[in-house]
Image (cartoon, rainbow, N blue to C red; front, side):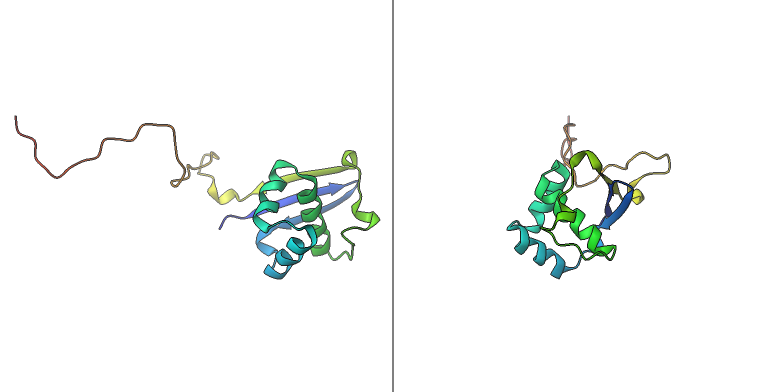
Length: 122
């Protein structure tokens, strides 16, 4: 599984959340808290959905040792004071710094014709 870390900044404070460090119980807690599934929250965060961003930022602050309430005033920040970045695992990079292609990913390039074991005669 690839590492996926979210880096957040609120004013001068910085927080990070590695999704692989989130426990199953934390995942269930945020599902119950938000009424959304874990998979939806992960995808929605990448789209910038406010509920997902707030949820993961809240988890990052809790992982940093802060006892903040999800619905408390400390979590009601202004967007202009907030920054979020996604840091993906660098191990998927090749030696020249370019991302290696995902062998499971579909491409638009035509596939070579299938080979058969029959011999062709002229």
